[in-house]
Length: 462
Image: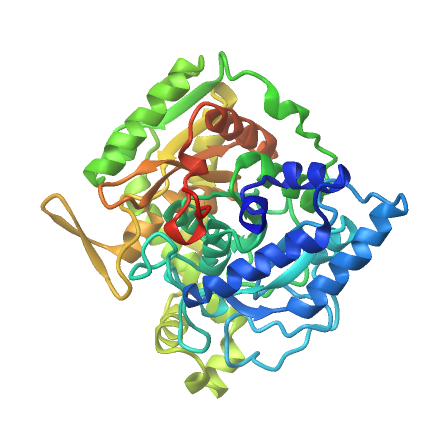
């Protein structure tokens, strides 16, 4: 029964509890058992097992006595370790904050608690969110559930791995340069990056404040929408998800979105376009100027701002950082004010182009990544005859919504020859998160990629 419980969506789990078929403690226990059996993934840095079970029992009593807090009531979730939970340690994946106890909840934590969600733990992350592998020297390497020799991406790698392994029904991650979308893609789940300012970052340890945002990872767009509506306080209902996509206009950056892709990525991306077209979507090629320097601009902003945040610690406590993060933070101090301002000017230039695009089209589609999950420690990857840095490849497509501060979502569109997940990215104009969720929900109603499970998370009879 516990295995079957983990196959349920958030809505299905809630319906079964309200029908008296299962209970909130059943949901929590199932997640904790799954976490125990997948402990070698190292998806969690802290687990609140006893407290979560006790809280589930209390929420069950509330429901039994007529107090229903809504769709997240009693649902087990996990939060990235840089998100404050009152009276819990908030490490941000670091040794510097190893003993830091949060005095208050982050705004997103408080919203989840008020909605009745049960926080079962903090997920492993790349130290201070400054990296894309979740190779954490203080809490250990997080591993990809589809192949434990591979990375789960980052910096929200634990959040992505936990959802893929079904040790939580949903998780929260933070996304600056792609840290929700990258784990979503490599772990075969759905991850939403809200536009900057749409979800409060109060109580979240910052990386690069002009690009930081908080977003959900879950098995499906519908589950992500349930969390987003609560996190944003927007009052958005899920009814809009059911609307047809007929006549929706999606742009594809040509040739940028088709260049230097692994063959399986190219195949799945083109097949995703065809599936959308079968649903009535109209595709149009678009041109965006200056994308050849987008990664450079991303690197400057994504290095200078964190180095400002860490200026005191990097001076006084450099040896308390992992080597990779220390090098990045020290490098960020070398950029000049001129370079930083030029990068910000480029962001304005890029945003203006996309504002024009979204005046004529509804969405823009790209791959999330040009490759599937690399091996742990792999720094370059061959794409055809070209060798590409995994760091640069991580940012090639995800940097676009980050630089423009616009919303985007990554969702599964297939698998490569090694059975590793492939993701695509949709981005939209300002305040259009529900449109993104609707497009992906309809795609998922007509596909099965998001239903696939890594071996460690499959029902025993499959």
